[in-house]
Every structure is written in structure tokens, then in C-alpha cells.
Image (cartoon, rainbow, N blue to C red; front, side, top):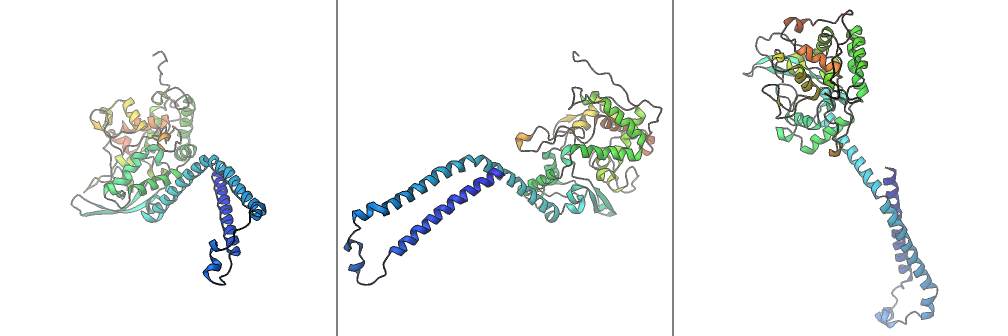
Amino acid sequence: MFLATTQRAIGFVILVLVVIGFLLWLFVNLRSGRDEIGSEIELAANRRPGTPDEELEGKRLNVALFSALGLLATIAVGLPLYWLGEPGRQEGAVETFDETFVRRGLEIYENGAQCVNCHGGAGVGGLANFVINDQSGSFVAQVNWIAPALNNVLYRYDEDQVRYVLNYGRPGSPMAAWGAEGGGPLTTQQIDEVIDYLWSVQLPVEEMRLTVDEFVKGIDPGLYERMMEVRRSNADVAPNGDVEPVDANRLSRGDEIKLGEILFNNQELAAGSYSCARCHVAGASYGKGWEPFERLQYGSFGPSLVGVEAEATEQQHFDLIWKGMDSGKLYFSRKQGNPQMPGFGVNRNSGRSDEGIPDLGKEGQLTPEQVWAIVTYERNLSNASTVKSPVAGTAESPSFIDVPRPSPSE
């Protein structure tokens, strides 16, 4: 930015010097012109005696030559300086361009599409008043729908997935289609500007992780301590080490079910943005999760996960939650991926800086022991007691399971 400002200043100095020189030349010529005092014969240049050589080759010639030399020297020095500052000017233009997009995105977020009314200022999450109708269009209920926090959305979704949701919305929820592709009012550029604004409010990964840890600690301090003990034992897990996340050490089964229940169901944590239930359990987004519905099972986007243990191995299950889905790719036995299933363990935008996408690092919202806890909880949803009152880990239970890891030779 400094180089761009300096270069711009040099350009203005050159312009001012040229303008001043022109004005001086004009002033001198006007002063040297005589008032009209007689006939055309007296004013015609070809009828007047010319300036003598002695006068032309004296002081006047020197003034003209030195003036031209000064202007030439200014140009000779100024243009290279301007050229040397060109990279800085380009960099400053890019920074200003990004700032402009962020500013426009903020305007759309707060005043245009008014995303702030549901998702809160700076994307911290909020509530949306929503009317639920049944399949025939009859009124069922009016609810306060929990709109998830967006200040972590670009850790679990890649930019293309966020663009898809903005374009096409979430059918059956307050999230409308905003992009022209989905029938909404915003152009492609405006959607990109909203995404640029969302980039500007993403939390640092440390703060995001701390939010989860403190939430668990507030519910069960003992479980929190055991979770942190397991995490410390996983210091060599990628991206900081060579061990694959699927091979990380784990909590005991009882602790995994308890921690999994906390992460799966809670809508209070960052307005449900860590919750699996908001997509896989009807009614969870407005406080009616796991309750029977007389007229309509409504409010879930993803399939029911009851019985998922019969469709995938633990490793397949872990990989899906850790990495998320890619559109069109097959998962488990017959599941086709869609762009609405996020990855909670790995930052899906990492490594895409060559596409102009900010890189916040490889770490996602959740750590390996947390994802394993969700896997274990989901694979026990067929047990009704797990759904209603998950089994908590006890102080006497092992803090973690040391899963055998393959040696490099294997």
C-alpha cells in the first residue's frame, strides 16, 4: 500500500509540473501579444520584421533550451520511478479490490439480503421466525428456527458449497434461495461479495476450537479433562504429525457416547453450527428434536442416521464426517454425495490459495477424538436409550483407547 501511495504521489507531481509549465507558456504568450491597434497590415506576422538573430540566439534561446532540458529531465527521472512502483500499485489495487468486495458484501449482509436478521451481526448466529406447513400447505406451527453461526462456515464447507447454499437455499427451512441461479434476487457477483464478507469474519482456528472445548467443560468438567488428555496423546496426528486422523487415540466408549451426544444434539453451541442433529433430526433446529410429530416429520435435510452402523464401517463413517461429501461421489453402499454435507475435521478450503481463496490452515472445526465420539454416538442411535439419555463416561472408565497403529513398513 505504501508503494502504491508513493507511486501515485510521483504521478501527481509530474502532472502538476507539466500543467504549471503549460500555464507559464500560455501566460508568457498572452503577455507578449499586442493589443489590436490598427489595420491587418500592422498585425500580420509576415508584414512585421522578424526577431534579430542576436536576440534569438541570446537569452531567449537559453531560456527555451533550459526549460526543455528541465522538462526532459523530469520525464526521464519520473517515468522510471513510476515504473519501479508499478508492482506496488498492482498489489495495492488488489488489496483495495478485496476491501471493496468485503464492504459490498457487508452491505448486502446487513441491508440488502438482510442476512443479519437471522444469522446475527458478524455471523454469530441467531433466530428466524418461521411458519411450518404440511405437505398440503396447511399450517402446522410457527417456530423460532435457530440460524447457525457463519463465522466458522468456511472451515467446514468449501467455498463452492457455500455458494451452492446461497444460490439454492435450504428447502424446508428459513434459508431462501438468494442467487439468480436458484431464482433469487442476487447476481453472481453479489453472491461472491457475500462470500468475501464471510471470509472476513471467520474465527481463528484456536478460538473456534476453544469455543467447543469450553462448551464441553461447562457441561461435564470430568469429560473435558479426559478429552484433553486424549488430545494431548494425539500430538502426532496430522496435520502436525504423520499419523492419520482415523488412527488417532480415542476416548472410552462410554465417554464417546456422552461427548458425541453433546456435539450431535446441542443447538446452543455456536447456534447449532457444530450440531449434526440440525440436518439429520427433524425439528432439532427449533427445539423439537427427537419428539414425535403427529402431522409431519419436518425440518431435516439429511437422511436419518438410525441404523447407519449397518451401512458403513467405522472407518468409512469417520472419513465421511472428517472430510465431508463431494458432489456426485458414492459413499457407503449406495449413497451419492451432495454439496450440503460438510467436513468437520479438515478445512476443505485449505490448499486452494492458487484459486484466490484464503487459506486458514488445514485444521477444521473438530479434533479426531471429537469426530470419533460423534461416530460412536451415531452408530448407537438404534438403541432408544442412547437417543434419550446417552450413557456418560465414568471416572473409573479408561481415559482413552490406544488404537494400534500400522508401522511405516505396513
